[in-house]
Length: 81
Image (cartoon, rainbow, N blue to C red):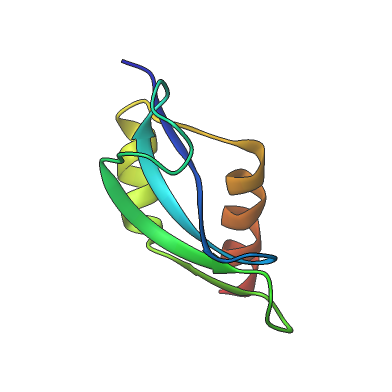
């Protein structure tokens, strides 16, 4: 089972709000997920990014692969701290 840390899209049409989730790579984008580890709202200025870095690090230690976008979000949160 390939576990991925990726974005799941929610919110209204043309106003997305994303959840950062840990999911099986075979599941659909907005489908079933294992755990929610954060949120990302690109509609605000500046963009609102909330991540539980401890959970993300724990899942990555277990072998979960983050997508390119999630890697960028993690770097942004780490720089802000």
